[in-house]
Image (cartoon, rainbow, N blue to C red; front, side):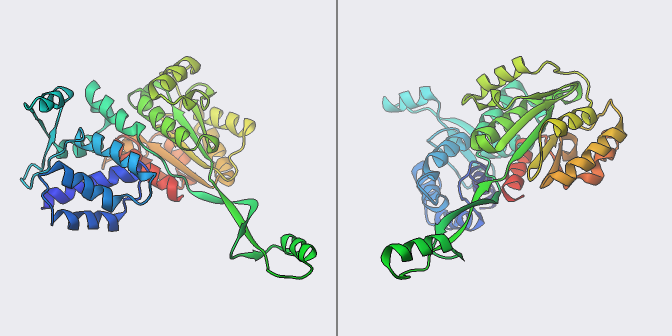
Length: 356
């Protein structure tokens, strides 16, 4: 039962990253439901999860995609053995099944969980492609902020103009009209380091950026940083991640070069504003420029931004210490220093953006 709970909890975490409201209470209900069902039956697992983890009709296509990605296909078989086996059917097997000769390819759910937590720099090409595929399904929710605009509401402040207009039209005050502020997704500015020291992580970071842009295209701005500051938001708006990354590779002139974070941050703050935004800097902090300049610009950024988050791939290791010149200069002005080395780390960052 412990292995089953670990498997379904990991599945619920994947759904939450994709935007499905699979909270802890819903996950608990799923486990209670599975206690009364045959967990070796794929249909029972599928429908139990669909009934307990989905809250709205919009969740259903996301649930189907995540179920297929997590269990390797529509036909998923979970046993209560110590290995928590998941059976994956290949396309050829499905064809054989139609002919009465089904053939199953065994895999393990624990392998999926391990893949989520492994450093992307140490993955094989096939494993990295699998992580990127799961990352493309990430539907990053965004923290909301109050807008200056108003909308009609049953409760809230008195809307004097609408109340007076109604009174003039009807000859009496028949009803007090009320209003409230509308909300908008908080803007996110993502600065992705594409220097040589970040080469093992740059593609995965850009795919995470693509998922953010696809989720909130109007409230997301992405720049590459290295020796130059390059806006790449337009390139990342392509629906297909591969096409978007190809366009980014053409637009960025300083792949695998050095890093001058202080100069580029000064350029950004001169050209644009970070006021009210969540600024995410993805870098290992190997600054080739003046660390004092970086510290000055970070202080300037912290005064403008709603929150400053630094994503460092090396933060995912227990023995990590921010000893590089860039990190020491930036650290006093950060709200959060988080890991950025695995799929699980990006899911946690997405949750952080949803509640920042």
